[in-house]
Image (cartoon, rainbow, N blue to C red; front, side, top):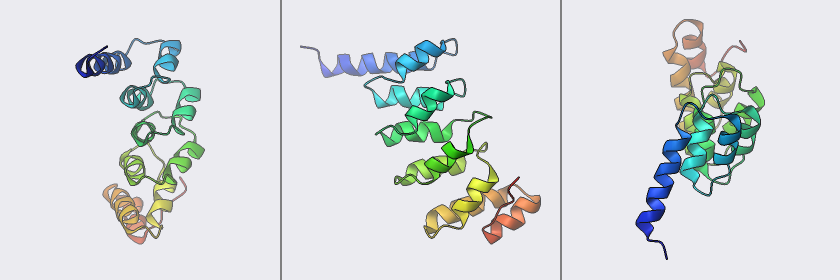
Length: 146
């Protein structure tokens, strides 16, 4: 009935809408229920997305959506949410979390002490790149709770 090209165009239009900075909380919540993972991921990455919506998206079946939440630079993100993402089974989700500068050093420090060599190495590198005490602690695989 509809071509594959039509479906792609519809999905792209939805992603563009999800990027609109003037969306209301209700519109974001509606887009967060989209069948398209790319649309949900775009909503998940927005700092203005309501916290209740982000909490739901953090448990999404799609790793792309969980990566969007991990990249979200919302300042008042609950530490429990970051901790949940730090334990994700998909490596790209954890790496997205490590690359997010708003994730507290305490979470990154825990990742730096993990047995997973790649996570630990990336987390230590992030801490070491900060300079000062974080640099020293990062090299050791620890971080201050502050």
